[in-house]
Image 1 (tube, rainbow, N blue to C red):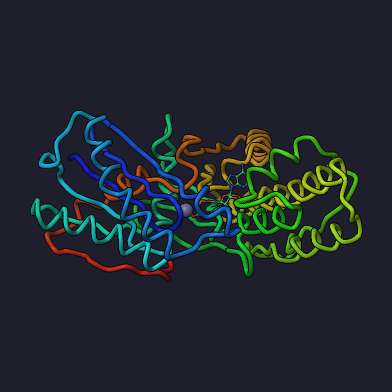
Image 2 (image 1 turned 120 degrees about the vertical axis):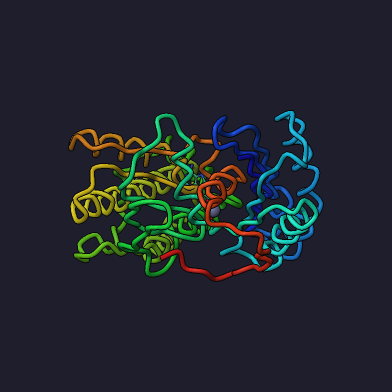
Amino acid sequence: MLVLGIESSCDETGVALYHSVDGLLAHRIHSQIAMHTEYGGVVPELASRDHIRRALPLTEACLAEAGRRLNELDAIAYTQGPGLAGALLVGASVANALGFALQKPVIGVHHLEGHLLSPLLADPPPTFPFVALLVSGGHTQLMAVRGIGEYQLLGETVDDAAGEAFDKSAKLLGLGYPGGPALSRLADAGDPKRFTLPRPMLHSGDLDLSFSGLKTAVLNLVRQQTPLDDATRADICAAFQEAIVDVLTRKCLAALKQTGMQRLVIAGGVGANRQLRAALDDATAKRRMQVFYPPLSLCTDNGAMIAFAGAMRLKEARHEYSYCAKPRWPLA
Ligand code: KG4
Ligand code: ZN
């Protein structure tokens, strides 16, 4: 089965071809970051217009790379939500137009299910069941995953997502947009012990998380230390990163303990953070547990995870067109 996947929920157009036997045949991403940078964040109207420009050329490029033709597709998967309404409608329109013309099934995929299953594209893939930590710019959730479509929400952020906290703190530190990767790079040069930042909800007794207090603590620190010199900026980054990594790691361990599961899966953009990976590798190894990550190129938004989730769902898909966008859509 050959499945085309289209991701257009936010500021990346991702297209990929996944084959149920041969695996991932091609994947392309066009990031709009440069376009949105001058506005300090994603401008929804510009995002939609750019998805329109990119979707078909990226599809052609994937087909050419895989040496396949459009009429060889068995299904088309697209991100149905959650995300920006206009941006989602572009992927929905392209997918449904292709499906209608080719008379093939069209599968609306949940963006977070895509992230959640993306570590299954790694070698070796994890087996079910596992605890998944979804950490992106829009979501921070812990899920118990027992199979495809069997997701139980264990806990989630009560305010900002972890990636959002990275981005907002980076902005306070004058690091541009999206600041997560820049903040993390600067943190490597800083001293994490010079400042101590709070670990919100660490002892809440449940698996919920909170990051807005951490962002406020960064704001207070920035005000206290202004004018910021380079070393102080790096030290604040290091303290921030250490606090967030500490909370995420300890909540993951608590989720593993609560469910009795032995495998942890990390998905979403913040999963690219090296410090987080090092802490999770260390914590799970000590407990003889396993941790799995998607390939680095598939941590942030991409079409491969949508094609893969679509392929997993293909047996359920019928020739009914699912032409809709769901900007707000809980996974579990
Ligand atoms: O999954 P993703 O591409 O998009 C969403 O669905 O949100 O995640 C993007 C988020 C952004 O907040 C970005 O700053 C963060 O992931 N991010 C990182 C790193 N790389 C991306 N945060 C911390 N360290 C990184 N290395
Ligand atoms: Zn995402």
